Image 1 (cartoon, helix red, strand yellow):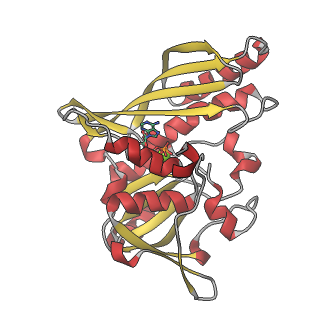
Image 2 (spheres, rainbow, N blue to C red):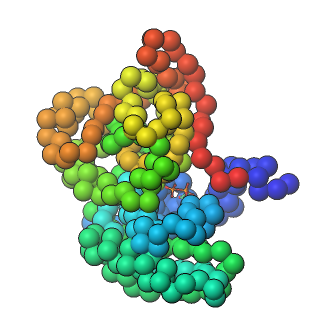
Length: 300
Ligand code: ADP
Ligand code: MG
C-alpha cells in the first residue's frame, strides 16, 4: 500500500493510533497545535509547518513573501488555540546553487513577521536538498482559561468565520495577516467553544472541527463570505490556504459578539452546530438542502 492510497488525513489518523504520550501532553495529534503542561495557570503550545518548493511556492516566487508565509502559517495555528506565539526555530533545506539573495530575502520576510508579532528567532538547522524546503517550529503559550480546542463545539452553537473564503492561491496566500489579534480578542472576551484555522479549505477544516467535537452542522450558502478572487462558491469552500478562523459560540452570545467586534476583518455567522448523527448539510441559495462530504486539500 502507498501513502496516496491512504490520503493525508487517514495517514495522520494511523500515526496517531500508534503513539502514546505522557500525561504532560494534554493534547497531542489532532488539533492546530500540541498543548503541553507548563505552569499552574498556563500551557505551552507547540506547532510546526513546512513549505516545499513546487508544492507551496515556485522558485520564481519572492523569497521575502515565502519567508512571511512560512512564519504566518505557524502563527495562525497558535492563534487558533487562543494563544500567543513566542519562539521559533527555522530549518532550511536548499541546493548549493541557490542564490544568496533569495535566502537574504527569505530571512528578511521571516524577521519582519517575527518582529511584528514579538517572536524570538531562537535557532534552526541547515541541510542540503534538491528542492527548497522551509520548516518552522513555533512555541507559544496560552492561559488555561483562554485555551481553545477543535473539540468543544456544542449542539445549537452558532458557527462563525472571519474574513473571506477562496481564491487565496491567486496571491493572498503568500501575504496574509494571521488572525492573532482577532483570536485573542475572542478567547479573552467570549466563551468560544471550539476553534480551528482554515488551511485545507472551509469544508475540510469545518469537518475536522466537527469530527473532534463529535457533532454535525448546517451551513448556509448565502451567509458564507466568498472572496472576489474565488472561482465561485463550490470551489471557494474547498480552495484552502485562507488562514481565516472558524469558531463556534453559544447562540446567546451572538449579539454581544457582533456588537463588540472591533476589527475591520469581516465576521460572518455561517450556520449552526447540530447532533453528530445529522451530518453536515448545506442550505443552497434556492433553499435546497445538500448533504456534504468533507472535501478540501489533501497532500496525497
Ligand atoms: P494544520 O493544518 O492545523 O497545520 P495538520 O492538518 O497539518 O494541521 O495536522 C493535523 C494534526 O496532525 C496536528 O495535530 C499535527 O500535529 C498532526 N500531524 C500532521 N502530520 C504529522 C506527522 N507526520 N506526524 C505526527 N503528527 C502529525
Ligand atoms: Mg491549523
